[in-house]
Image (cartoon, rainbow, N blue to C red; front, side):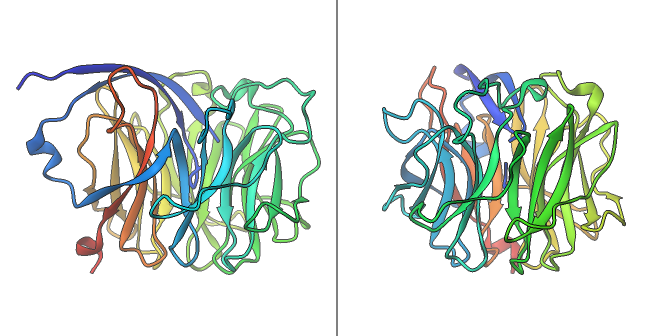
Amino acid sequence: MRKLLVFFTIGIILFTGSDIVAQTLETVAPVQAKDEMAKELPIRAIPNLTKAAEAYYSPDGKSIIFNAKVTEDDKVHHVYTANIDGTNIRRINHQGEDACSYYFPSGDKLIWTSTRDYPDVPVGSWSIPSIYPQGAELYTSDLNGGNVVRLTHNKYYDAEVSVSPNGKWILFTRQIDGNLDLWKMKSDGTGEHQITFTDDWQEGGSFYLPDSKTIIYRAWKKEFDESRVKPMTIFTINHDGTGLKQITFEDDQTNWAPHPSPDGKYFVFVKLLPPRNFEIYMMNIETGKQTRLTYSDAFDGFPVLSPDGNSLLFSSSRNAKPGERSLSLFIMDISSLVK
């Protein structure tokens, strides 16, 4: 079958949750044959949310927090929340540029990254590690964006943030002198503690497993910092820095954006297939078995599992018009796989 080629440039945010480490890739996206798309489980688009990515569920599964340009007035990305049906869209911060965000498990507080207090600092780029935005600090707020509390005060790159299921720990990536490492601190912003200390790996995109002790994350070798396509590996580690374990083993493969299931038995992640096809997979942590979930030749990424484990929230360019550079949010029903 003949394929229509759609060329577009996508800023691919290699998070968590997520989150921001990015590559700008020149992507060739053929319109997928229907027989391939038929392999996917039921999917629905969330309306009203174009140019949106890095979305995460609220603890009750009824709302999401995400990074987007929602209106024509949005010159940069900001943090928003919305209901999962695309209604009740609310902008959380109105200063600077925002990035990674997350809900606290209590459901009444948010955490997000922003440059809001450093308008004089060079903008830098969320896409190139050597010039990540300095002065990207971490903040908490209520669900309306009020009662803002700044947690970090260092002019570093502090981003790719998430919160432990028990609500006691904030997990994030910090860049110091070009090195990316995992850090944690208490939920009130005190007790900062560095978790990883590697000179040759760049760690980030981390999330706690349900035990609130084990962390899953992705990393790339520092030698690939400026590469447009980075081989990436997924690891787990205890939050005291012990028990490092490699989870994926394809040396030249890009495996990134892991997000764990509510029971901790599996996780979803993104795999780069030749030549430039980003697809979402699910992997059993114990057995290593991988199950492919998406089959679109468009970009599929930023996978996140719902609190009940039955739904997959992700970003995709599958609905983009030819020549359009935008991601939208989608939900896949994966309940048949996890029963």
